[in-house]
Image (tube, rainbow, N blue to C red; front, side, top):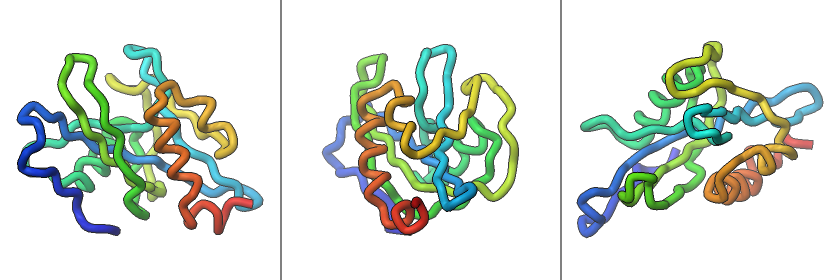
Length: 151
């Protein structure tokens, strides 16, 4: 893993800090599937993510949020990148994302996520609702961890 993301001292005081995971698994023939989650309340397909708790690192938050939203306990493979946008309540938001693989667990619909679907790598981009998630996905597919195993 890489070092922890550092937010500059001059960042907006109302900056929302969040973190999440892009969970992958390898299936027959070395093909890659990605976990995409559907949130009925927002009507979107995205990756699991959520706000940092007090004193939590971005990595810790990503692992916790993935468990809370998907039921999957995962391991971090590497840092992927960040998305930055204005939250629906008008505050700036940064979300860090980590590439993850599942260790154990099982999805059960919950208060935040209504459905989890394992999507073949070649269909993930078209499934995602938000441009920022599609741009993050474009970073993901360049990672050697995927190219080495996806054929």
